[in-house]
Length: 144
Image (cartoon, rainbow, N blue to C red; front, side):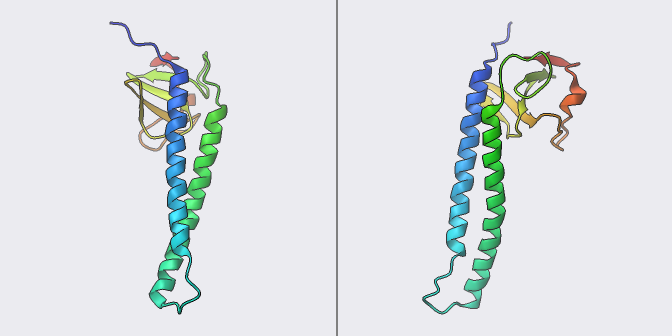
């Protein structure tokens, strides 16, 4: 039984769509927290309102960093060349132990046309039992 061919253009488009949705969700969360961090200065401010506003402000700041990181990730993904590869580099799809890995930006696992994929940054392990792409050298897999 032969494997279905890997369409890297579809993988790229799926990744862009999923990461754009993550960015939009992060943006909505950020705007929600910013809205709750604002106090109505036309009325007396209670201590608990002040405390809640300060917590919301701290969360908004953390979400701002996440929002910027996500925007950077999406921008990076847009410029990665997903063309054919002869070495493991950004834009490659590597099959190792029956799993497909996309060498790009780190993302959650995703499915593209019925195939489960994982994505990681070039040259960096994920800390979840992953590996360094530079160490893989496609010894146990196939480069796509």
